[in-house]
Amino acid sequence: MKLSVIVITKNEEAAIARCLASVRFADEIIVVDSGSTDRTVALAEAAGAKVTVTPDWPGFGPQKNRALALAGGDWVFSIDADEWVEPALAEEIRSAVSRAGDVVAYELPRSSSFCGREMRHSGWWPDHILRLFRRDCARFSDDIVHERVVADGPVGRLSHPLRHESFVNLHEVVDKMNRYSTAGAQMRAARGKGGSVSGAVFHGLWAFLRTYVFRAGFLDGREGFVLAVANAEGTYYRYLKAWLAQRDAGR
Image (cartoon, one colour):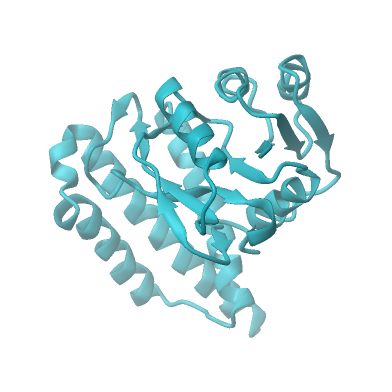
């Protein structure tokens, strides 16, 4: 059984070399770039990846489906540029791909860091995500953000974690919060859902409580508090942007 690794990128020169070096065990590596202005494409090509540059950005789900369409392996492993595979997980992936059976996809735990701290609570661990799947039995949802793999068949689970450096500094947190809240508002509008000021406040407050209290974010120290606030702000702005778009459309 052959394994393809797929990665979508844009301006990931700080992380892409580490990511691609960690998946050299695959039979092929596919990188689909959406117009990087840094050295991402050059570094990916130097790492031996097959690189395709797309002229537009359709959203995370559609872009990952573009990468999936280019994969030639029987199995596909999807990884983000800010993630990497350690040797124990690499061996577990190889073993899973070589096994015969009914399982068509595998979830695996992801261990993420936030502003330099590995988060063990806050809803971030073990954060099981479906990333390994048979190419003919799965695809990505068409969501422009928070996409997911939809598998047609039994799903197994691996035990070794995928490493993830989600945010290096607060600037990245604020930038991603703004981009994702805008995309989330667009998704709500596409589904015929709006928002309200009171709804934005309520959902933002609930996001903070869920992260910091109910998911024990307080055990992640000061970074846990910062993360809870960031989650609250992102949720608040998503609903507020949806309300503003709905209001302006009605004028």
